[in-house]
Length: 114
Image 1 (cartoon, rainbow, N blue to C red):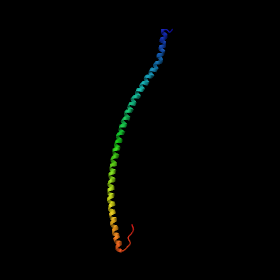
Image 2: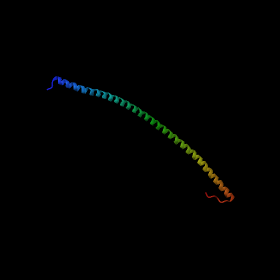
Image 3: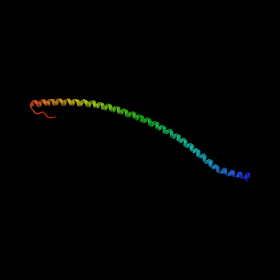
Image 4: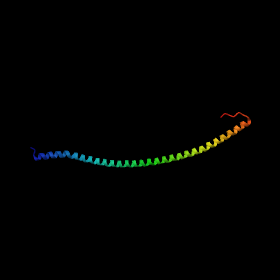
């Protein structure tokens, strides 16, 4: 059977072995807490970045839509101007053909087939 001094010696040995483990465990817990704090900070920064990117994307979408509308207006304006120019030259062409036909008729020339 173990005596009181034997039990105390065993307890001392166990304490000597457990004490470094407790110190390491405490250090590990401190590092884990530090890592959790950093992770929280990282999540905050990531959230902030996501918010900024969302705002920038919205701004770019608005700018693209504005430019698209301006381009459509510009093309409509160009189309209207082209229609006016085409109509003008079309009427001029018709007038020139009529005059040419009258000149050919007056001179007795055969009309051009066109």
